[in-house]
Length: 345
Image 1 (cartoon, rainbow, N blue to C red):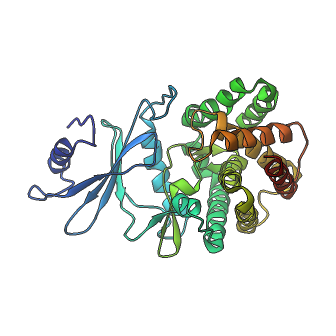
Image 2 (image 1 turned 180 degrees about the vertical axis):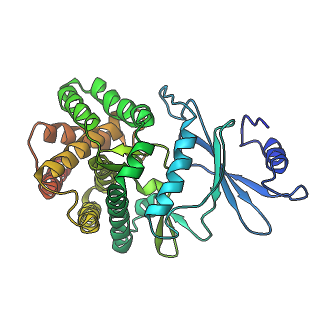
Image 3 (image 1 turned 30 degrees about the vertical axis):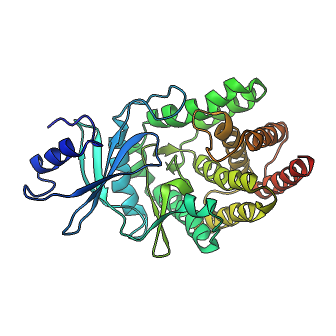
């Protein structure tokens, strides 16, 4: 059965009943979920339990600029759900219930209530160090365990189409077009990234895609998952802590400390597998490119004002002109420049 829009309750109910996903006499409640730009997402509340979250990929993403990606990526996310559940401790990844290739949608078990979105918690000022450690350790475990099973997993996730359409073009290339002085740095980084095939890369590892339930982090949104450069996941995730440090200004030091804790927890979890100055240099470069992309890419951080976006842009461009082979050195440089710019404003 075709369903064009899962956000319309009556067609969704008919679809679920017709395909045997709910009983014919069942009348679940539907709630549209917000927060993402690339999917329609609906929570299906069932009176007998077994709540579902259904996602349907959009061809045109919900952002201010024109941004498109093949909705077949929902099946890459389904694949990610299956494999990440094998690589992570129980409860860290929702269970895939079904996928529908005709309608480009999937359903997973809903994370039980009560839970919170970690991005919302962080923006509310709640910086829980134990959750930061979990977040870094979980990423390290995914990278390490996938690498250990690389002969099996690498061929499955070799296609990097969605990484290009959802990350490299809308983040790196788009930001480079807006900042010609960064073009050489970003183009070199993209060539470097294209040549690296080391482990499973989530591609969207961020607090926004993390729920907190009973003191544990639960990871969501896997449509960018691919076999590639683990340094991208680190640069992408570190950027979210640095962006919040920028957002909170004089009170932002705890978010930079969280970035350091995240990095330390990651290193402990990979057991030295991804390390050394060459790897750290890649992490630094991805962090700087992501910092610029999150103000000048197709999906800027919505909580940054124009003044804060300009501050982040100038810091990223300034540090791109310098060589940093140490992640801790980058944190020190970011701390110095954030404090320096705050004192001038």
